[in-house]
Length: 248
Image (tube, rainbow, N blue to C red; front, side, top):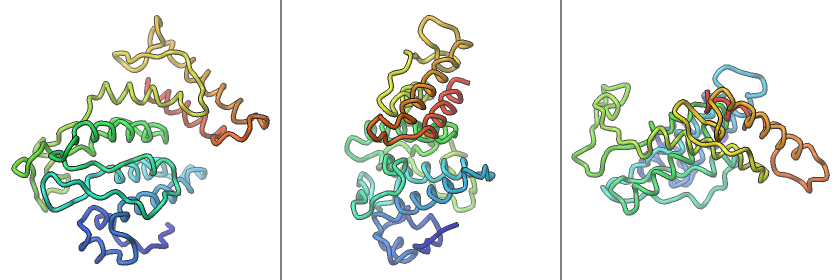
């Protein structure tokens, strides 16, 4: 794996500035989490073409890591956004990290973050519902836990994680996302009990809009007279795969 910044452990990106600089002194501590996620995503995207085991899981992990809350040392304090570094990968650039649930507008902002994360996880072929695992405790220090001997994480084992969105909202957000690339309008879809339904049809009829969307986007991406689209046939294929996964 390419690691030009000599990042020794991703945990440093989630710590406060002093601890983060001890781990990687040559990077802006406010950007360490962001830079770590971007580098990891680049590395795993680079091996995707070879179908190497774990490449999709690796990209999902990078996106997931980018959305985790970073320690600020105080309840209700938001972490500083990275402004000194530009992401190589637009997928990472699109993801903000969670903020302390006791901070101002946290519920609304964190919900938007988890829905955006879900869209991008699905777009690379992952399970969009994994986005919910980046959510946090309920507001207030008394609701947290810290157990160094819990390898799973006490937020999970003690059932203290509070989800920012519902599974249904994740599914609906992912379905809407697949029709954005290239400004393509797809057949209308609505959230269904077992995935997405094309309006007035049954779940068994949901694959045509995925395929139709892929064909339309592929044709536009391949059209040299399009004026220089910033998406590719590969992007259309990724949309199709994610769409099918979302309605499976």
